Image (cartoon, rainbow, N blue to C red; front, top):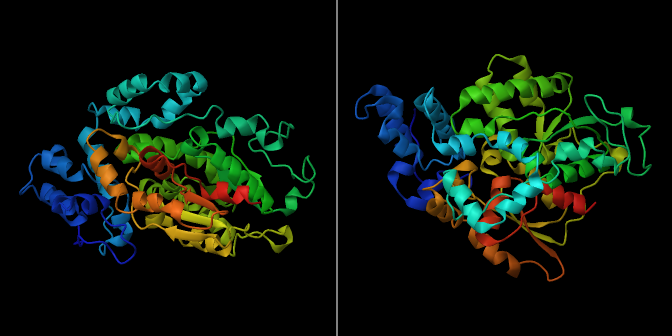
Length: 435
């Protein structure tokens, strides 16, 4: 499995956030890899995939993927952890969080039957704590508010046109806001696919709404697939790989035709976008559709800054003026490890924003930070970089400027809200507000 150092890396300190919090050798990539090696050899660790030593070593692994890019050996402990959980619980009863958090997209569909009622009930703190505890989560966490109108529902109802019906087929096009109706020059505009993952669709629809506005202003003809296309992220992180493959097979049926026809696919949630760029290829190594989707997938910043896909000069697009913005920017761990954050940073600096790019994990890491037994370590990880920066933010920048916590990751925004009562924004929201 190779050797890996225990200290932070020169690339920015993303490595082993749990080790940075605990300073325990078992929580570093090298220690975890050694335990797995001993299990495979059957020497010091016996009991196979279900050995207590194995699960103890992996318990505080956040599945952040930092080791995959920062470790000299390129060890992807997140992938190893998923495989261990998959084999350990195959055809067995799983921990309750695997059904609650691991099946989150399923529960979002259930909640969508009556989201307002669900939000009202869960706004009662006593009920919320009971739900969290029974679901294997730490009751000190806050319940997530569900979208009253998911993005794709809003779009299907004509939200993108302020209620003006547009032609509906397997896709819908955004009319030109300047004409107030169907666009006559749509065929001349480069087409892109806006992919609404489960988090963006059901938990933060304001982000894809903002992205839609930005893409239209930048001169793109935006396609929003009407079908659900879940990437299976929560199944992957809980080791339910068979379930993940089923969801990705459906995703390939929805997004595959766009990709093979050369349309860029814009992902908004970094962890889900990273699945399409990495895990998809691992789970479907011989499927040409997977290769096409991985190659076509872009972050919003990548699309806007890559010469191959950047807006045409004729669109009149330029990065909005951000010169009065002072931002604490939290790159999502999966974006740091898989896609890179250079395009986002370049775009923000081009707009003139004063940014502090944090090095390190926010500490929530999706389902991991919600689970019982992880709260204290999650907070300790947040204290490495995120929480000190948020406490310092009010003293930075000009009095008449905007101070903002910028994070594309839903988990990162949730952590800041939960621990510091700071409401973050995604890049798409910041750009849309400044158009």
